[in-house]
Length: 155
Image 1 (cartoon, one colour):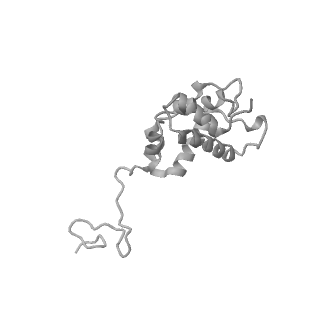
Image 2: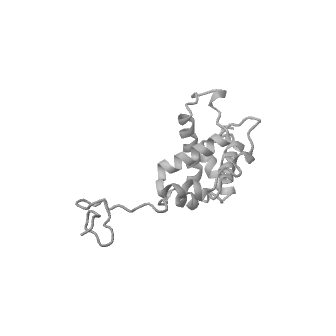
Image 3: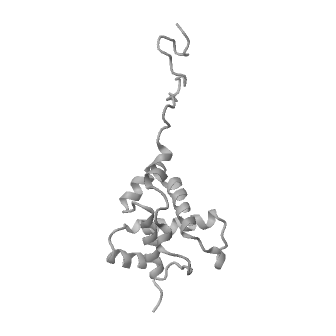
């Protein structure tokens, strides 16, 4: 029997386990490729292996670069709510032979990696106490002080 293609594997998995959208599997595969490039891993061989912790970090970077402030919403839409979900996806693909693993790799490597809200939401929240600036053309970036003129100086 021929091994399943990635898309065949995703179709098979999603027919059995409906927790995650098929795009979640594609995202994890793309994030793995991103992580391998980011870590400058070799194209083939043992040195190409990515640990669960490395992959979680790569997933975070990749999601933020791909989706920006929408990252959290996109991941939630696909059924991804915690780092353990990434481990479930990885091990579904491992079980079907689409991804490889070492003896040290475990599902638990993905547990408690980071808080989704902090990892994907916090980078886009305004900093408390930061002054808002008006960047519209022709507008001053300086906010007037109460009782002052547009340049923030007394009238």
